[in-house]
Image (cartoon, rainbow over all chains, first blue to last red; front, side, top):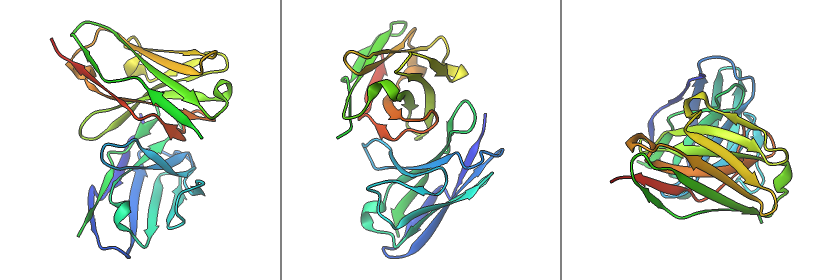
Length: 107
Length: 118
């Protein structure tokens, strides 16, 4: 199975700052890498698909980059509503797998 | 708009089975891949499998073969997951989700908590 390693596990942020979250795959997943946001007691929400493609209705401050094994989710100007857990997920090879998540908390 | 409405929380005895449902609306069910996922506190997410609603074709995570069975009812745009021989390891929140391609889940149900206890 493809192992996705997310770092950091927890990130303390200040509203307004630009941040980057990392997701590394144990083998190449091409660009079949998706990012999700999950708030407490809610379902995950798709933020970015295929590494860098935007999703309708998602604020433009969220962006993604990368291919192969190294991927980044960036938030340009963190807002309080962004305090959540962020997961990466690969859809390149079976079984599809998720990373353990990065939790954004208030500094 | 797209809706995926899952059935309510379940309390089941060890060794029993449970059938979870996911009623959908707002999109073309017959051309969708309906996935099921498991989330335990940790809070890791595992992909269980998908079923293509058009022809009932399935693909399972090997880990869940024999544990989960996915079906659909196209007439009611509803997806189902049977979980069998439940143990404490199966206690989790289960989500249904849909995608227009396998491997990506664009919309999710609200999740259902399954508790296994005698």
